[in-house]
Length: 300
Image (cartoon, rainbow, N blue to C red; front, top):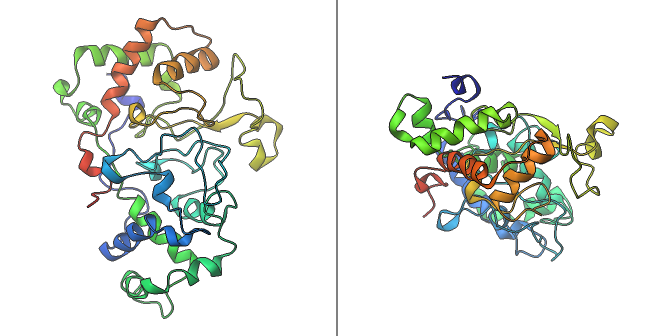
């Protein structure tokens, strides 16, 4: 089937995890939930990318409120499967999970820490954990190591789905209606951008190819590159667990998946979908949801 040219099953391991030890992952997990490394000791990574109670790595807000009480400008995307993407953040300004983990700590709206040294000073009580995670370093509590550990934990957040079993040859893993939705997804052109192991997250595309998106204040990747051709260009969203991660788009302005599918077809493909066609596509998108919620970080 042609869809297997566009899609691949999720690997068992995330890129960069080859040297991740249990001790490093354990430290990263603690740091992911540590609110003490925000200015007001009120904000952790998990407060914007929630994993407790088997949540899907988001906070379900249009934009997240940071440690100082101010909202951010962009929607917090899911952390699940994030390391399979080409780059991190909506504008791709971080090349990998390690770079991404550093950003929110010093961002004045997010965790708002004044500098790297202040982050380190808040983590002295983790000295044994750092020593176990970085056994060959004399002074392992560093800002770089904080990000390395958090990234190691995030690389465990892999969520296989029924669609993966389907791609591996289990034709009964999805229903006929879901397979019909997959064919609709391919036929109208969604598959051109939303492909690969995460059904997205590998390309940068202008939002509003045929029709402008209503939010013209966020210039997207242009803010990073300063190239005119990058105006309103954003990283294509992953569709893994997409039914579990509302609201949608970079600004979180789209509350439902039905509206997100309708808008994407219109803005990007110049296609007006019927309600039935939208439901068909969403039927397929359900197959991308994590099959075993326990994979959401194996939280206690």
